[in-house]
Image (tube, rainbow, N blue to C red):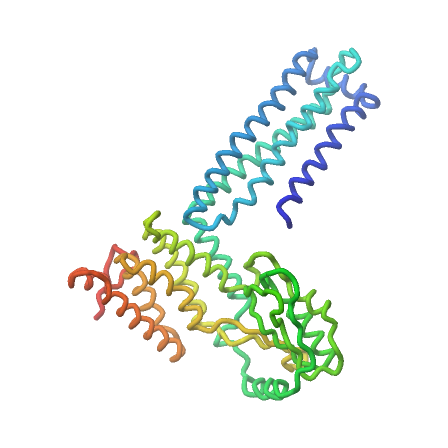
Length: 421
């Protein structure tokens, strides 16, 4: 949902209620207002009601401005160290809390209307309800500002990645046993001639999600194989080839295909396992920049990356081959392999943290843990990366003692060393 929609909804509710409810109470609910006055607010003076409503209106406006300023500055300050993932939630809380000030102003106009000495108590109760809701929104906002702490942010990104992995990749031990048959079926489909090519003609957009079920149904109805040439997370520009269709008995409508491919101005978590890793790496290398110089945050990011890579190491990372109910492959699209994930996770951290002994030790510890993977190819890829880390350390301007220290394993970076045995 766009960020401006929820504030617009709050304003669209507050303004009509403030304009019409006091009028409705003045014309039709006067007897109930008098009864309420006698029951709870005996002898409530007009001046008192005006003072209360005026205080709510002015006080909430001032409080909204002050807290918004503080929260915005906090979000901007934190965004220097990492991407501001939650800052867009701030306007929602403020607009809800500001509804009470809008209602107070409208209700204030109906106090002592036409010198009637009438106080719209029911409208004042509505203002009180919105005031309580606004204070609860402020409490939620304060909790959200607390979530901007780097540890909570790293954990939240890691949690999103773990969900994406479980939904995107199958476990190696539960992979389909008919791989040979699937390969044969796919080979038969791949040799079919290309009958349709779809190219993108709009402004630059990122592929946020692919509706696999819809594309498989289109391919099945056309007895074809749809091959996506772009992966989820890719930014496509004008004249980029999105996909090609092989062996179709009829043309698949381009609008239906584009409807099944969700394009966004920015990457999203939904089906993109690389995006959370990209964010974690960005946080780490920002923390390692000379202007921030916070290697401990980089180590915390590596903690999340190691956990993600351990889970990826037990997943089937082949390109997606989506089948219809008959088991025939109807859709393929590329996904990263193990070495892609390994380099995405560690290359830039290794480069920008080359002079940090703490980061080098934590990287070695993570790589040592990944050497317990089940597949020989992935273990060899990790071993090659360990050699690359050794080469990086050997080129650092360190003396022999510091180089020995940097070559040790340490899950804390600089805490408890684990010397190779």
